[in-house]
Length: 469
Image (cartoon, rainbow, N blue to C red; front, side, top):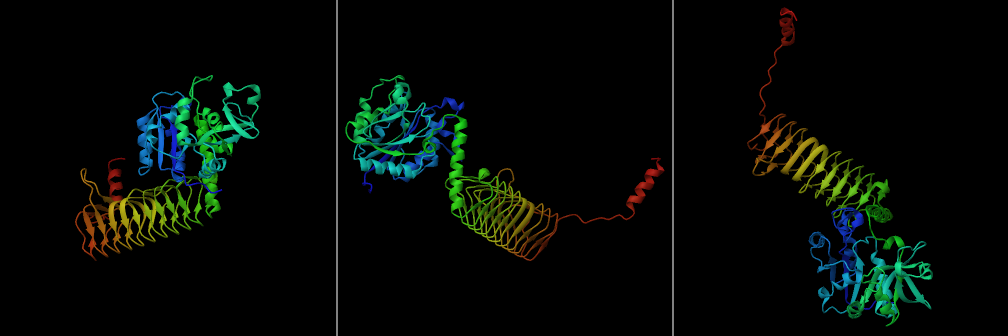
């Protein structure tokens, strides 16, 4: 059945303190594969086309809002504050003012449930359509349902949800559990929330009471999801367990798309990373969000690539680190290289062991194979930069530019004191400190002349002997 074109919004509950995390940080801000827990349900809602998403915040509200807005700067977010922790129904009701005038369906999600799939939520909306009632819900079947609200049915139709502490022995034997994830018609939602009373063992406003109220108005749609997908996070053991599931899910998708992961158990790839087919990723590699890896790229063990692009056919040798860098086709980087923000490399560039770059644009075929720092630099094509070369780009106040033309040869242990230019085809001798511009085709040498004293060692030994020692 095709889903009706019904307006959609979402409420994501992010107000809890999470005392079992044993942390000063709000629970929903704890990271899982590079993003806070709450980022995942928020993203799922946006992917489904929610025109308004309301994170309900409470504990450390300002910190949560600041981090979420930074993650989703263009998203239609309106934050709502739950001033007191009085239960899940009270938390959702806190979002009513933010959705005033909205007519359509409201997805209710949780900021500490990171593994929920977009496909499951799409199925939930379809089940809502198919049932034709005012509410649909996600359920899960557990062999040991202890602690979960049980879904009660009569003649196959959902009638209500009863919480563990309020359930009879017969009801506790039910294995179908409520995942707490709903699609609800907005008009029904706000009216029903006003009618919910804290008549339960906890003295709280239970969101689960919505189900019984909805069942009185029509069929309640259901979608059964895997228990792993609907699992929340209550402590750091569960945080690590959910991260492991997400890691495997992401890695499996890349391998099925033609990427070789030599050790998926130690490879960490964040959700939004793109990796082209026929690329190979070694053990212990981390690829963070915003990174785009081309086809046929080889990434050696221990590399960290953060918000960077690596074009087709390039090789990152072991333990290289890239941060907001752009690597062209057929580059060879590392081992132990560091490319800092603003690095842009053309094709066929070689940067070897212990080379560091920052705000450096390096032209086609240029090489710096060892022990070099190139910061605030514009380097032409076909340059060779010897070991130990550095750009002296900072004078304590300002950072200045070093410019090398095409075909420049820089000898080992050279200091280029910016601002300075070295023209096309020029040579700089080893050990030179360059403080003035070097014209094209010139040789610059600033080291002191070598002095050789023949017989000096023998004369020294003779002097020592004469002094008795």
